[in-house]
Image (cartoon, rainbow, N blue to C red; front, side, top):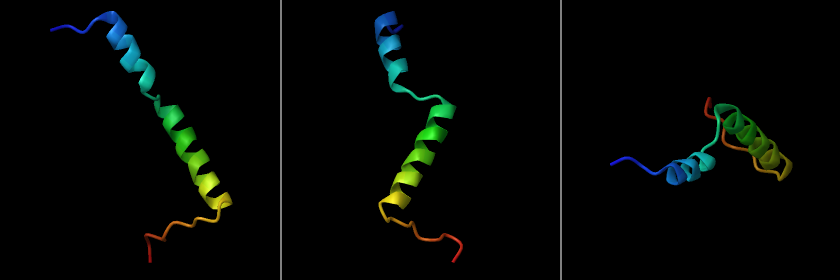
Length: 44
């Protein structure tokens, strides 16, 4: 069954572009560091 145009538009608004995902992850990482959270080093 085909989804209605309104439903498809609503679902598409919830998704992020690749660029947005990269920018958000970078911003969250910077905020974590500013708040004093340091993730464990995966190389050790």
